[in-house]
Amino acid sequence: MRLLQVDAFTDAPFRGNPAAVCFLDGREPDDVWLQNVASEMNLSETAFLSRREDGDWSLRWFTPAVEVDLCGHATLASAHALWEEGLLARSETARFQTRSGLLTASSDGDWIELNFPATPAEAAQPGEGLLAALGVKPLWVGRNRFDYLVEVASEDEVRAVQPDYAQLRRVRARGVMVTSRASTSGYDFVSRWFGPQSGVDEDPVTGSAHCTLAPHWAARLGRTSLSPSSGSSFASMRPRWMSILPSRTSMMNCSSWTHGTRRSFSLALARNQPAAWRYGSSSPRSAK
Image: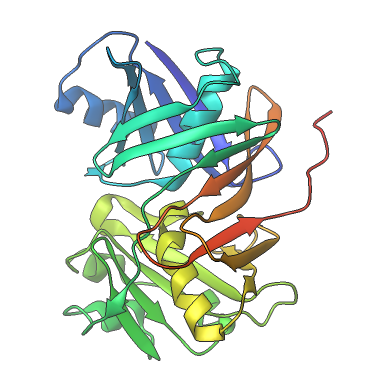
């Protein structure tokens, strides 16, 4: 068994959102063992990878408390690790079999493109205790199969949120996104993600949340190009632009570090809708 720690969504070490990547190397541990490893790693996500007989990779994600159905940054870290560890040739497509179906990753120079299911939110009544736990006055509340999405009036309100985690833990959802239009120059919207129900009080950057945030803000702003920022400092994730394409694939630019080496990636979010959202940035500089 091999275990790596990868910093995702950052262009510098010791920043972004760290994930553990565990190669099981033919072992078949039970779920209790997997959960115990994730709890001991005590990162927002630990990814477990094993090679299947058909050549695909089985991929599962665990927080310190529960197994989850979808995770962006730990999938990004897993794809990074496969190429960095020489387990796949750069010309090969990585195929991940997950609880959210087949996810694929392909390498293109310094970039990795991942395909994810989109999960747009529909307007919903806030769950019992949700708004009291957040201490906010929402402009809009929505829900998808994972999370609540709470839109507030300003970036300052997003920054100021100090949840009552004990109360928020009782809200029936994987987690909660709080978002607003950005007032900081260079960004169109900001967000934070809280998930004490899943064993993560606040995630530094939640890639899977942008499967929901992208369609939400594209519709709100009526824009074909958007730039998001995420995390409590709004500095953890810095895709340079996001644009709506007449296709069903979207991409998010990001970087990861492992073994002191920087790599840049593109995270693609596939969706079963007429339009999609592309994230990207200018070409990164080579790591020194």
